[in-house]
Length: 141
Length: 403
Image (cartoon, rainbow over all chains, first blue to last red; front, side, top):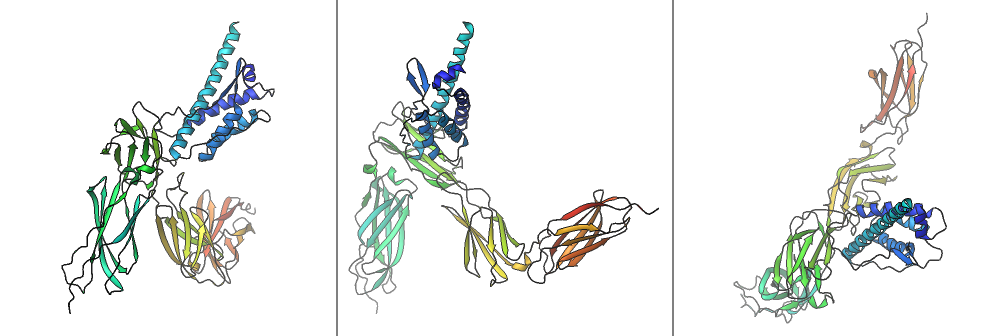
């Protein structure tokens, strides 16, 4: 779990566990998002990681802001609620709240939601895969 | 004396406005300088053209009794979103009064009133309409794209599948969707994109399940104080932009009404002064439709007594036992018909009917010594049978026979 600890630069021991649970929730949320027939959107991007010195850190405050807005425009989605709860645990003290604006138009709202959920799922997968390759390297040395 | 027909009066001050979400053109006009009649029966003929004035798509008549200088109103629903094409409207009139002999003649047409929305579309280049339209499952819907360029390499997709339409003008194409199905509460996704071009534009078509007439509408009371009405509501027609259907009870004798909180049951307080007969209308309603069913009944014919209580088996010996119980009183001086059953090894071996007021008692006899039995009772309202109450019962064992 040390890899996850470096990802969050947090001192709390449970953070790596939270990230692992977030990865599961992110995948499920994206897979359960049943909106078919939406075009790919490049103009909606999620700032998932903060690149600091040599190691990227998860941008929990930004992601939280995005998911709180998505929750506002989606109908009682429990996994989004779970992601929000987990992200709140990762929030650095006094972190500024990012201002995120969801499109007013319903079709664009769906495109926005779809893009963010997919990017978050991919981002958490990349983190997970990066962790696996780090552990593998350490086992080789 | 038959009057010669006056010169027909051309309608004036024709104004056309748009209700875009409802895809309606709203017309208003008036007729001036009547002769010496305070009011006049007239027929108005309306023509509607699309894209250009020669392309007439609708003609219809509208009759009205017209007062001097009265402003008349009329509206027309377009199957094509009004943003998709320029529309033109003109109108003429004819006297329709028996004092004037036939044949009659039409007035001159007003000039064409043009209704163009394109210049209000905004700075994007690709648009899809209608935005957030709400229809019922099975409806026919027309959508279109408007592309502010004459190249025509735009493709449109319904739930990811490409669909093909009819080109209306060099930069507008219309797509007819027949018998649209319900797909999900968040709506059906439609988008168009310029092949190899900028981001797509899209709309959500909200297709609602059809509101059904409530089924199995029934009311009953357990105490002559509260009526409990239930029904089968069928499909929930709620969508992201339309709340589920609502239900309202209306009682015509008392003229009272109650908006129900639940989608398949509702309670109604029986007041002291209330009548014995009830005529209920249950109204189901959503944004698109209303459905209602009625039910007429006598209150005392719908009594469903509560489960009896204080049930016990007493004076048990080797062959006999006495069961006693109490009913919840209903109204004043009511009687109950109760049914007692004796079971042995899952079989009903005795059944007795007893008429009681509040306290019930029944002797069970001819039983076997040292044997396990189960006794139970249920009751119905004595003056008019509607439903049995729930059962209440108890196991017991007869004593061994004396040596």
